[in-house]
Structure formats: C-alpha cells, structure tokens
Amino acid sequence: MSLVVSNQSLVRVENLVKHFPIRQGIIFQRQVSAVKAVDGVSFDIRRGETMGLVGESGCGKSTAGRTMLRLYDPTGGRVLFNGQNIYELKGRDMLAVRRKAQMIFQDPYASLNPRWTVNAIVGEPLWVHGLATGRAQTERVQELLKLVGLNPMFVNRYPHEFSGGQRQRIGVARALASEPEFIICDEPISALDVSIQAQVVNLLEDLQDRLTLTYLFIAHDLSMVRHICDRVAVMYLGKIVELALKDELYSHPLHPYTQALLSAVPIPDPKAERKRKRIILTGDVPSPVNPPSGCRFRTRCPIAVDRCHTAEPAWQELSRGHWVACHLAE
Image (tube, rainbow, N blue to C red; front, side):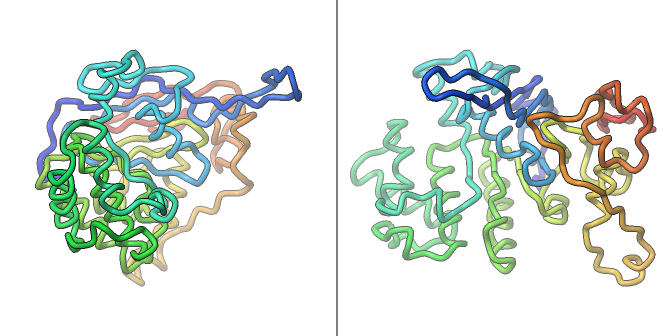
C-alpha cells in the first residue's frame, strides 16, 4: 500500500462508456447490437494511491483500463488526466500523456515481442519519446533492469530465455522507461505462479514508494487487492456497484455482490472460517449484449425486490467515501 496519498485527483473517470458493435452482412455490414463492456463508469484516482478494480471475468475491468488510456476509443464519457480530457488531445499533446500514463499487461508471454531483445523492448519508449538513443539508451535500459531486480547484462537476451516472473519484470521495466506518473496494472500477477506473485507485488509497492507512482490495480485476487490497494471499486457487468476504502469495504460490504465475493475469500483462521456463512450465487452472469433491466445484478441477487426489476439504483454515498449502487443498501 502506498504511504503517501494526496487528496488531489490525478485521474478522473466520468461516465465512461465502451460498446463493441456487433455487425451483420458480408458487404454492407450494419450494426445489429453491441457488447456493452463498460456502461457508465465514474471514479477518481488520487495522486500517490493504489486504486483496486475487482470483479468476475468478463465484467469489463480490463476494457475500462484500456479505454482509459485510449488503447480503445471510447463510446462515451471522458477521462481527465492532470485536468486534461485525453479524448480531446491529438498529436504531441496525446504523446505527452502517453509518456506519463503507462500499462502493465496481464500476460507476460503475449505482451513481449518474441523477435525483439530486451534492449529493444524496454528501450522502445525511450526512442519514441526522445529520451535516449544509442549507447545512452542501452545504459538506461540496464538501469531499469537493475531497478526491477534483473541482471543488467540481460539486455541482449530474448523473451523466451526468461521465466514468467522475469518476463513480467521486463514488462514493468518497459512501463517505467518513460518515467510515468500513472500505471494501470491489468491483472499483472494472474498468469504467474503463486510463489512469484508476491515478488511482483512487492516490487510494485517498492517502486511506488521510490518513484511516487499512482496505480490502478485490476485483479481477481481479493486478498492481494486488500494487501496492496488503498481504495477498492467492485465492478459487475459493465458498472461499478460499490467503492470504498479497503478496510471499510472488507469489513462492511453493502452491496450483495460485494458480500458474495468477500464470502469466498479464504480466512487463515479455522474457527472463523467454520463460523462464516458462504454466499452462493445462482445462475450465470447475464450477457453484456442484453443486460437485465433495472439493477444488473437482480437476476442473481438473493434479496432482489420488484423495484430492482424496473429502476436502476442510484450511485449514492451512504457514508464518507463509501459509495454503492443498490436500492436496499443502508
């Protein structure tokens, strides 16, 4: 967890929408529907903090992260980075934002070009942003490798010569090359062995303290999220249903979906584990092509009432810093 968190927002997401069109026809393709991957998401990330974003597979977490950095073009909404709406920027202005906002990808095996050496992979941001070339670039890459705990002499090796944990460290070094302020960590440990996960998380925490970084940490592992994050947002079927400080969220979850997620987290106390009641959700996650009316969680919610079928719950702050979208939360 970061030690110093400012009250100033570095990133503000306002009603972010990303729909992927579904088209029919061979020649004249017309849109017949859309996958509503992200459907009106709003939150802010304060300078120096680690914001967690959790939820089931397919809920839109990674799409939200990629859309925030304009790796996907948004369908609607806006993202403010240092007060600038990045969706309005072009050319050099957008390049300047890309230097300060980077991403660590989920799969360390797919995110590194197998035909490039480590020097080319980590050095590419240095070349793109005009930070270093030639001998100076190689020396800077060696410094970055040392920073992430790798041998600086590995600069001329290829990705297939490294383990999964080492590849992810190369991905971290690449993200750090342009000296960013903000990094989106898109499930950076989910593809790694459990024994390696703690090493990568400890590395991210150490780098945050040394370089004053701000993170959006997207993950499935709720135990790891509690360890590394300051605040946590819970996402379900394209919408955020709850957001709070991590201790508040884990001790007093208000949304039925959050309660179900947390009931599945193992507790290292046998007595407490036996007393705890597990919440088992019925049914499958609805399709984002045709989400349910009203509350999107109502088809699996154990306490849903008639109002949940017709009215979408308001996004409301029930206590200081604790936001929830549920008709029955109190």
